[in-house]
Amino acid sequence: MASGNIRIGVLGAAGRMGQALAAAIAATPGATLSGGVERADHPTIGTAFGDGVIGGDLAALAAASDVLVDFTAPVALAASLAAARAANCALLVGTTGLEPAEHAVIDAAAADIAVLQAANTSLGVNLLAALVEQAARALGPDWDVEIVEMHHRDKVDAPSGTALALGTAAARGRNIDLASHSERGRDGIGAPRAPGAIGFASLRGGSVVGDHMVVLAADGERIELGHRAETREIFARGAVKAALWLAGKPAGRYAMTDVLGL
Ligand code: NAD
Image (cartoon, rainbow, N blue to C red; front, side, top):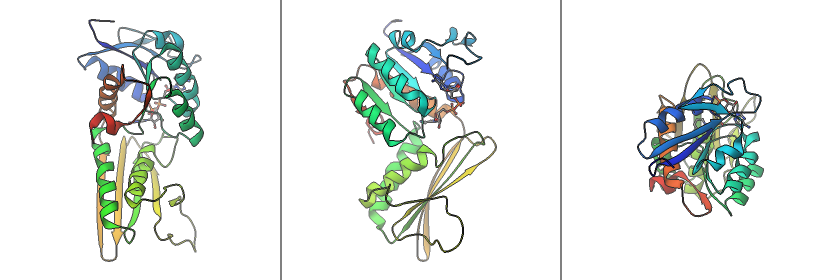
């Protein structure tokens, strides 16, 4: 270990977030980049990444790291968790679009290692979630909650993980379950919103890093609570802060609220 630094390994090294993470780790005192891996068939294997090159050996990277940071795809998650478990290494899951089965795999791994799962690692969005929960609790069910998000044209999951996290925060404030109250992708006639629903709308286009707006609407007035991400650096900075916090923590499942004390 380099002079007491926490060794952070990056999964999805060639991706948008993988590249932002390498820069954020280099800029963070106390953090060292232990390497990066990609899918075994990825054309970037062997190309430069920090002081080294992008590799394909997940187990070797886990063995050389105190914490792995995974911003890849849901299909890759089980292997990431297995490698982290085998090496007794902590894991930060930043990948979005996770289904209940994938959350169950995270819970199982958290019996053995420290796992932090966060749909959004920025300070601003996590504060926004706390404000949304507070607003939903204070205003009650007469106020309709609608969540609008926009992301770049290549994003594959919708609604965004952050929009769902904001919906979960609103549902928590209301003391209801999001799954049985969410309305997504409205289209056509004869489909007014159900009382108490939490609605989602997703826009895709251009290079937008991530915009979220939570609208609380009542008869005659409306509150809009929003966040605009201007650069992926905010997610990368937050992820590195969370990785440093997570390294060496006891086994368990953690969230950004634990890191930020929100
Ligand atoms: P991207 O497509 O640019 O990068 C993903 C990378 O992961 C690709 O290079 C891909 O080859 C690689 N990959 C896929 N499967 C892999 C595997 N099995 N092993 C190793 N590498 C693998 O996507 P992105 O914009 O960087 O986003 C990645 C994920 O992170 C998405 O789910 C996105 O929604 C999420 N995200 C989360 C946050 C947050 O704050 N939590 C912020 C931004 C993006």
